[in-house]
Image 1 (spheres, helix red, strand yellow):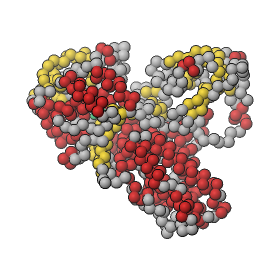
Image 2 (tube, rainbow, N blue to C red):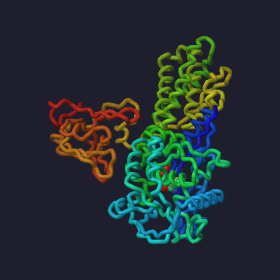
Image 3 (cartoon, helix red, strand yellow):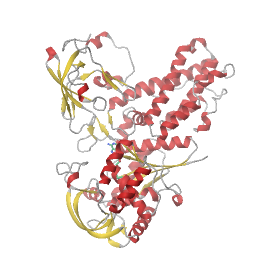
Image 4 (cartoon, helix red, strand yellow):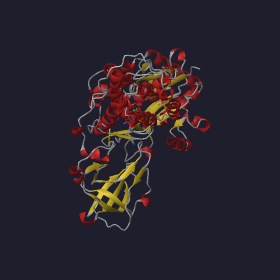
Amino acid sequence: MEKKFYVTTPIYYPNDVPHIGHAYTTIVADALARWNRLKGNKVYFLTGTDDHGKKIAEAAEKVGKSPKEFVDNLVPKFKEAWKKLNIEYDRFIRTTDKDHEKLVKEMLQKAYDRGDIYLGEYEGLYCIGCEAYYTEKDLVDGCCPIHKRPVENVKEESYFFRLSKYQKRLLDLYKKNPKFISPKNRKQEVINRVKEGLKDLSISRTSFDWGIQLPFNKKHVCYVWFDALFNYLSGAGKNREFWPADIHLIGKDITWFHTVYWPAFLMSVGEDLPKQVFAHGWWTFDKEKISKSRGKVINIDELIGITGNKDSVRYFLLRATPFGDDGDFSNDAMIIRHNNELANKLGNLVSRVSGLIEKIGIDKEKNKKMSRLIDEKSFNEIDILMKNFEVDKSLNKIFSLIDKCNEYVQKRRIWETKNKTELYAVGDAIKKISILLWPFIPETSEKIARIFGDWEFSGKEFEIPLDTEAKIRKSEPLFVKVEEEKINKEEKIIGVMDSKEVGFDEWSKLDIRVAKVEKIEDIPGADKLYKLSLDVGELGKRTICAGLKPFYPKDKILGRKIIYFSNLKPRMMKGIESQGMLLAATSDNHSKVSILMPSEDIEVGSRIS
Ligand code: ME8
């Protein structure tokens, strides 16, 4: 039966061009939308921009433009970026769209008529960056906890929304629908804060006019979050046919607004609630915050330019970090995955098999068993992962199927045996792989389809075997490798890489020693890193930062001996100079880490050779 699937991204502030963080949420939404389209569901995917508010008005003023002119210039940059990344949304909504403004006014009036909006005076600490008020308690050194800049003390006549009234109903909601706030680890924080009590929320301003006027008092414009959140309802298709949303994808920065304000607003106006809000983690760039002032912004053209392939961007962002967790972006990490996974594994499989088929031909009939290298089970397994938003694990699974095909060609020595049935089996598996990959890297999948005989992308097509009559020719490489020289040595050693031959000369350049962990400390502001102080015998004392916190309590490392790479180029991490690395094993999806520890009787400073 056809099911509806309505997915949304936040509507982004068009005060600058989009960057990697905006791309991330939007790419995940696109992958989910495409996966559901594959399954034949009735999909609706909404994204857009949050045009109003003081932040936009100020940015416009700085460049001498009216707010409308300013956003009208930037909105196309978002649309272009999404096109470049093959993101296929159903509607791009702007809060300046007439139908949205009309709906917000209706909702304001409704909440007002129900007695949920009243006039008062607001005095508070306001962050323009967040378009939100904070309490003293929320501030860090007197500054906004997110933007780290001073908040303003603002006093103005304001209308208030009776948020306090909804405390119990919100707590009931979280209890009744345990998945409403996902992933699990973000839920408790919200629940605790709601339990502490909710203050009524100021929802209008008189100090600027770039916003939607309140229908019951034209002097006031609507607070940006009341305006913005209702985009999900005004943009829900014709007659709002797709509401309620199946999933609101957001970054963890705006969890509170989506899991507290938004359901309370909807309860007030008597609309259904969205089924789920998923707040994913935060990307840093070279371990630093993405921030214009520090030059750490990476826009979409630059991102695509690193490998020259848009699917590499989608692939890296979707696979490199478990969805929900924070991630760090670096050019090297992306190039390594592009070269080793996309070019070496997928690209080689496709060009090798298409070349063999051109030379040898295929034969379906002789051995039916062979044509099941991949079956429906794989589709269903990935479907379960995708229902849980485990996009990274889905790609892991698909790549294990690619490995299986490469191993099959290798083991059966098909290039020697010229076995047409076996070759057919791999060709058929490639068709299935292309369908499974389509939500993630659609352009590549479509290229594969053109090489092997053209097919639609649907779950039904997954069950149709490869056409034996198709004219198959050896393909051009799907991915052009990026020169390895461009990769910094250190990353190579950390190795998201596959094993590769290394000359003795290269190996012997490393100075690897036994070291003892003398001290282990947390690093303020770092979720994953510990600072370790090491004794390395004749080399003296050293400090390193290591991402072990999620995997080891301190007492499991303190006083133990480890294997230490002593002559790597030092690198600054969270303001600390990390003088090398320790040796640990990491599972493919980074969910497990195991430090290699030598026996206690070996002396510190001993060389590993
Ligand atoms: O908050 N890592 O807009 P915004 C991961 N207009 N995701 C990131 C990111 C990063 N470093 N930086 C941005 C707003 N994002 C409001 C939303 S919704 C009704 C109104 C993504 O332009 C992530 O999805 O500040 C985050 O929640 C969003 O961009 C914030 O975009």
